[in-house]
Each structure stands twice: as structure tokens, then as C-alpha cells.
Length: 68
Image (cartoon, rainbow, N blue to C red; front, side, top):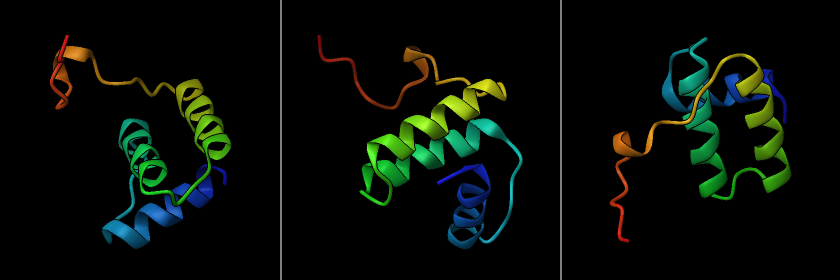
């Protein structure tokens, strides 16, 4: 899967399109978690999106509790 396919899948899922690389990164993560793409596809998408300026959310912004 490439970025164009990810954008198409995003459009089908959300009924709108986006050029926001961070939103696409979140969507790629969701599709991976739901087993809709492989780990290799996910890694490739993350690499491409990071090259376009996407950033992972900071830990303090995460919705997942830190259980250390």
C-alpha cells in the first residue's frame, strides 16, 4: 500500500479527504491495529509519512495511560 491508496481508504472510511500527514499517520496506525494492512505496509507508510513531516504524538499527549 502506498500513500495514494491510504488516502483513498481514508476517504472511503471518513467520507472526506485530507492532506494532513499526521491524520494519515493516525489512520495508518488504526488500519494496522485492525489487521487491514501488514506490518511491512505499516512501516513503509510511516517512513513515507515521516519523510513528509508527520510526527508521532508526544507521550504526554497519548490517550494510553503510562502504567510504569
